[in-house]
Length: 109
Image (tube, helix red, strand yellow):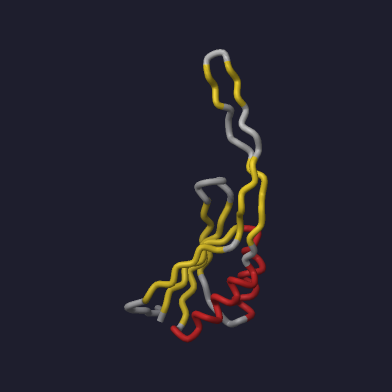
């Protein structure tokens, strides 16, 4: 048995959870926050048999898309006598960060 931990952007969560349920996969959804852009993420804990890992990975690849987003700097850098406002910049977001971990023991109580 494996535990798949998938961290995805909130924008991808609805399509991903619908596809997982449609494929008969159970999961636990945890709301999280990313550190760089401080945007909402969702972490899914998905327990599957070893042979189901490729299927779940395929669902993740189909539903979690990478895209670019304009990031707005949080605050200007202040120097004595100088006000510098950093410009907006583009970053790549989306996709998924996935960990696949061996499960030593599983019980449903």
